[in-house]
Image (tube, rainbow, N blue to C red):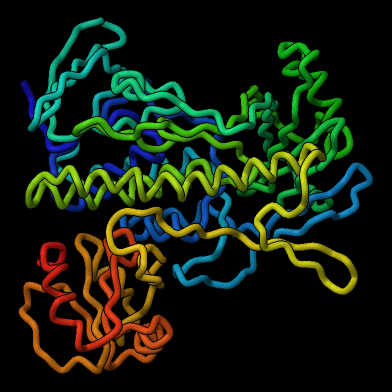
Length: 486
């Protein structure tokens, strides 16, 4: 029976990202995927600066960037094409070191994730294979696998198992976790097209058509790719809606059949739901296996990759040191409220697109003197977990700073937490600490000053673990966090 450190079920963006993050530590990893190969057609089309920073950690940004475009934002218009609300995405680099919003084609990302995994000798994949059952004890999990074609059963063991196997997750069923519906369920048609020639009259950003008769979305995607999505009425036949004649009739205001090639057409049930349980012993859920949200904010895949980023370093810590159920328990508590906030905001957006909700989607909608409304993106903090809730810096994103030679400070803490010290602290420390002095970095010193801190510990997922306000308390602060820093 083969033994692994981690078995990941599902080889989509969440599973592929998680595998890459864990592979950086040199662990033995098995990825199990029920499909023969990755899905070659478009699905997810958006990610943000926080996610690009994770891709940077993995080491795929240089090759992947050419397959992306910077997203200019979203406008909400009514049936008369009047702008009701603007959601601009400025073309300026954020604290994460990247632009706020990108468009991409999912197969391009999956190719890059899989290609990167080939650099790691301890990473293995089993395609065309499904999980039939799990059997867990205190130190490992036995996974029973079935070859889809031959029906042969194999057994492997692993110290940890993560289900990244989508909305119909087998792993979620195995741990008997139930989805909680959060109030939005609606069928939509999704149509992906590739233009045969440039159509400059098409919008260069996302347009949300807030219309009670036919809510719809237009997406400007990479290259000549474009997407339209529209709500399906209860009395409409799905077969009829997916007919070419019906779709081209819907697209008539923008395109005629000679203008584009229809690459994909399908029907999704957009829904908002979250699993009540994300963990059972050494078995975890991530991505769509743990939560579902409508696509209006483009945060579905992003949420899964945030899961992977949060969980990977905690599993790595347990594999390198000792299993800590308490540490691993913070995975759900930290991610749950964060993803729930995204789902809640996405549902509000869906209600506005259906013309039954308020434009106050994020709580940060402002009006200009001419009456135009615009909104800002949300960046929820982590939920309760590691660190003290009273610490105002805890759970916030730590910006991506550059060192003297213009290298990213991120490279210093991709595998373990880093201790950032103010120039006020004179004491020398052992090399066993992963630390940076702010003495010769004005931006870093300014950050500490604005954070009212003389020291902060930053986790490998770029969130602040804790901060220390005074030199007087520094010794006890350090001793409390030694287990993470050593």
